[in-house]
Length: 92
Image 1: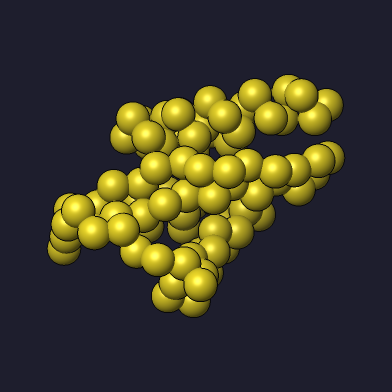
Image 2: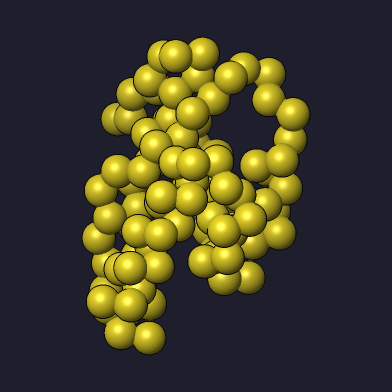
């Protein structure tokens, strides 16, 4: 897959995330995907574990919005902004 195709897929996944469409959002993750939350230091490894983390009952209302995206080849990084109960969580 070339960089243009990867970029389009990442954008589509970001749009799905913004819309709360978890099924489409998780189509991009490989089995060995890693999801980092720098604010809390949490790291989730593996597609199945990422999916499970998203389906846990929330203690607070959360909103996830996609931000910047950069990548090439096999490595792509997408910034997401997370808000809980209407308050954006700052990233260091």
